[in-house]
Image (tube, rainbow, N blue to C red):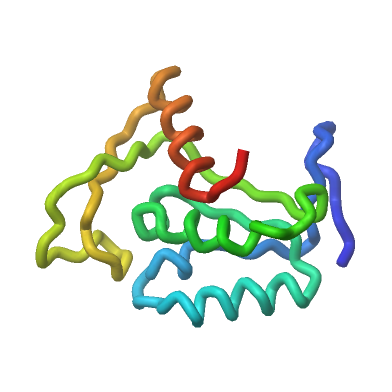
Length: 131
């Protein structure tokens, strides 16, 4: 699949990307096997750009996309996520999260301060298992 350079950066993305919102249970729960199958199908189709966010299923999408990336050549794929929402643990017993069909085990806190952005990036990298 054709890859395009993003602006004047050294980052390249495939013409088609995989959006991770549904992997986080957006509107409907998705089990681990279905999520893994969708990611494998995307990879097998030549997609090498994967976009996610801590917002998507309060980190579930990031964890699932991170699992796909393990064992793949690092220079073969591009990964993006977002900053500004820090996930804070909470008692989510019996509650579902906003529009995502996942337990509300965390709440989102908006934080665009320097420290908040750095924490958001570090937390996302940890969830995805990448550096």
